[in-house]
Length: 222
Ligand SMILES: Cc1cc2nc3c(=O)[nH]c(=O)nc-3n(C[C@H](O)[C@H](O)[C@H](O)COP(=O)(O)O)c2cc1C
Image 1 (cartoon, protein in one colour):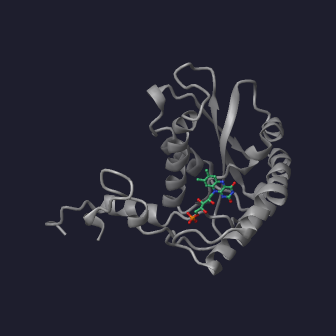
Image 2 (cartoon, rainbow, N blue to C red):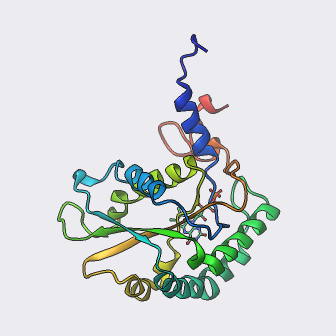
Image 3 (cartoon, rainbow, N blue to C red):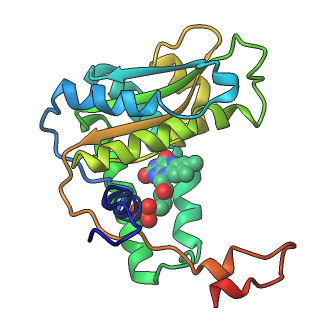
């Protein structure tokens, strides 16, 4: 492929992106610390506001802590998110059957949340005026979360971005023993996957992209 303008390692990145599904069924088998360290290194290479790196990542292995959070994570599904899920239509790129399977996987992860061998809890220390605790704050942590999800996928580990514990933020953060001024933005359960990696289901680009102003089609997508 010497005459190809495409760098094969970049192609590999696109493969990883397009097969990085939410992996919710995880084996309880331990994950070597060196893999978690590589994932964290990928996370901390991410963009963040003013490069202030106000993030903090808690590697949680303590089953007592995980169980104490799982109680709130499950309560949020049972009482808030679950009923809405059950009555909503399949999203773009999905089908009723796939959506039903997604729901089953969500329930599975909820029941087994604390059994994932490792969690990475992505936090921000809200002590830096450059990162105000408003709706832009997440922009300084979710790129790191995405890097970690991609790194996990590249290493053959299953992972998923979860935020549902924040439906009971105070209770969950107490269970996580977060100090004053530190808030959690995501919990990433990580483990070896029970299922296979596969293509993610999304809608067509045409449904989400316009040229110059919303609603104006872009011929490049025809
Ligand atoms: C902001 C956000 C919060 C999410 N919270 C949860 C969660 O609490 N539990 C969960 O199982 N998945 C959660 N997800 C994962 C989404 O459900 C998942 O990305 C989506 O269904 C697409 O899945 P797929 O990539 O496997 O197609 C969250 C994703 C995002 C972006």
